[in-house]
View 1 (cartoon, rainbow, N blue to C red):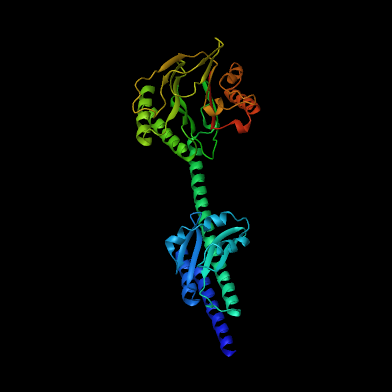
View 2 (view 1 turned 180 degrees about the vertical axis):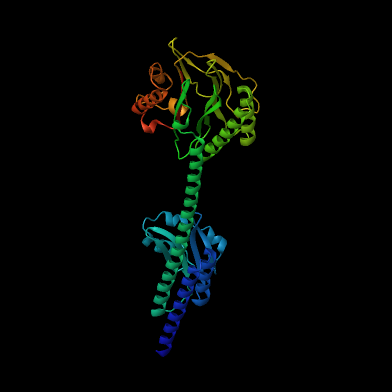
Length: 409
């Protein structure tokens, strides 16, 4: 009886020591590998369990992570994963697994809420643990130890996941702030007696690939553009940032529109290796001569309303999109003489290719009723957007939506 009490006390002592050591290692942020190896040594050397197989989730998949006293390769090919996937209630899994493997007579399921974290298979030689109090103590201890261990490992995984999300969120917020600096706000666009601009931009995701800009080149000359980078999100926004930097520098060099398009094409091809491209409408306007020069590089043709003639036209002349080909063989630079009070609406396909409630593309014809009215360009753009929102459901918009309006007074 004294021997029995001593063994029980000694078992308690070792188990308490093991739990204290586990808590210490967890608090020291020991690696998952070290914690699991310590667990296996405990089972094998202290509890003297001859056959052990531990399955745990790694890379979102239940895998054999350690085995003692059995064929590791054979066991790694076991159907345990299929058994787990067929069970809706983890309480019934133990018996299902035990019936499959003659080397093991005990299954311990480590779970958190309804999620299985690990499965421990134990194989005892006959009468190794004996029957009675010692067996109960060991099973309860192993379960307690396992639960603490794998809950800690799961918490570490969740912590890493949250860190990664926070890092991505911080990077995204930084990129969004950079994008907001790159895309001018409507109030920052030129509003002068001879020309007026107004714009609207809404990315489909957190960040977009649409772009517009206006450059005051001299007292009487302005450059402006609208563009759409293929794709969406961060990669498209980064390419858009590169486009803005290039455009600013090239306009400042006082190059012709053709020269600007050629240099832009070379830059984008070198940067993306032709796996992305940009559609671009780029123009230059002189308020004295009232001459509009433009190149449409594969972009949706802007709609021009010539006041006086009461005439609408689509500005289509140009070339292929930027970055589609290593070299652009032919570029058409069109020149138009504008009359006072003419208006131009530039847009991206997030506007024109969105479907109305009738299942018809919004297109460009819906702009026309608003262009022949003598409203400020801001009012014209807002009226178009109000009508767009009225007849196009939100779920029918699949891309960034951008409009750049110009009033030639």
